[in-house]
Image (cartoon, rainbow, N blue to C red; front, side, top):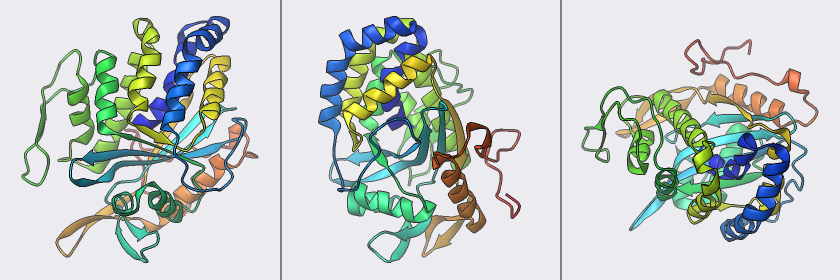
Length: 326
């Protein structure tokens, strides 16, 4: 979700300022800086035709990558998103990184995050497309250093942490976050997102909470003038095949609408399984079929806003297990 935040940061001022002032501020203060930064972040992966305007729905594969010295990067966060600019709606489908699925070009199954570590963004895109049965129009990746830097540039974020968050198992990276602090810095925010020792459901919930906290902090009046600097910070840790002109048009679309998009969330359902002493997440077959239908419905430009499928959630906002009548 942090990668999507980088795409939407430049739309933030429109939520605070009136339309005319926002457009003037963008054109005079931000456009050149944003264009230059995003051009540096542009990285094409194929020659396929991509959407050229922001009128129709489009999909973005969002990856949060764990780039470490002397180790191959892994996609620690994987989210398939569909953006519907005309309706002001965004669908986010979280795919657990341990999901057991066929890896593109390898003709064998493994954890889905292995696709990035073994074949980069191209193999990740192909693998996710095979799983969800729908095309990926664009991708956007950001590494964890970018997350920390963005949060620190904002002066920290507010997070609803009411008890100590701590990884205690030897196989997990050591981290600890104290509860009930008014503001959490970048390192603490990253630890909050990466905490492993409860469940994938809670982990994806924390990702949603963090992205909302970052967006809320960005939209505070005192931080509006930081948006160009935030784009620079994010841009140095950010890669996408979305042209800068497309992102700027998307930002202006949100400016003109005068509001930020609303988000609908879902997480691929499944259960844990051990294979050769390795833990995997087996996706539920019916739920895979469900998210394929969900994505197709949102991605279709002929679907009226009133006929968009709403993700099946329980009273706590968690994804329900798909059933045959969905």
